[in-house]
Amino acid sequence: MNPLARYEPLVDDAAAFRAACDRPLPSVVRVNELAASPGRVREAFAEEGVAYEAVDWHDGLFRLPDGNPGGNWPYVHGWTHGQEEVSVLPGLALDPQPGERVWDACAAPGSKTTQIADAMGDEGTVVANDNNLGRLSALRHNAERLGITNAIVTNQDARNFSMKPLAFDEFDRALVDAPCSCEGTCRKNPDVVDQWTLDHVHAVAGIQKGILARAVQATRPGGTVVYSTCTFAPEENEAVLDHVLAAEDCEVVAFDLPLDTVPGVTEWDGETYDESVTRAHRVYPHHNDTGGFFCAKLRVGGEAGETAADGEEVSA
Ligand SMILES: C[S@@+](CC[C@H](N)C(=O)[O-])C[C@H]1O[C@@H](n2cnc3c(N)ncnc32)[C@H](O)[C@@H]1O
Image (cartoon, rainbow, N blue to C red; front, side, top):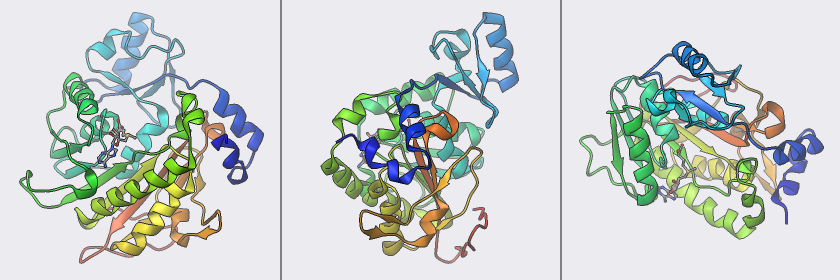
């Protein structure tokens, strides 16, 4: 079964969705503002004759039509990092602040860890965790190349993450950029479509629920947890939120993203989900010429937690 056909009932224009999924994804770099401003990177590209196109919805993202993010000196000097457009969305939703304690639960190879560290001005602590040691070496390399000093690397199963090695016992914010069935990356990795199985969707959904629950438990009352995937499967998106909402003290809050998105769905394959999952964002490839993505923001309950009114932005 082609999984993309499965999601046609969810989109506004099935033909445009399928056509966008068949087009190769533009190559994109994010500016590492710890090293250079977007303006300085523009100058460097002009000096070196690198063709680029600024992404209009976010300062500091450049499309490279020649398709080689690493083949120029701004990259070699750690001024840029190859990161596709939708991949910056969880970091924007998380909105980490200098001096905070942030957990990146599934961090390798570190695109979002390095974006988070950049947003924090390299101040505070990012605990970059992944259960795959090989992928963590790529994360270490990226963090070193970009000049990041506020990241600690841990190698644990995030579902049972232990705070013991750390000097504190809760985070201000956590990101769960979860392992998933990845159909949203089909423009970059067409193989994901052939390798897709419903059994894998159900298996990985169990892992996602465990990791998101642990992220809520590890975050202070009133803190923020962001959940993201690059799959269109409601089983791995809204159903995971619905499960964790019932099991943990948290709520899904409304937030804005700077590109065209549609709300999370409340019904799929005979299941219904909590109405608040409509506050999550679905990103389809044909709306912004990007990869596919899903992003939700949760506020942890408890003493400092507040209730989010429908449509109201809640800052942590
Ligand atoms: C979507 S990728 C993360 C990409 C990364 N956030 C970035 O921006 O570069 C998902 C990651 O989850 C990791 N992973 C899978 N199961 C995990 C688990 N139980 N605990 C921690 N990490 C896990 C995988 O090794 C993989 O690196």
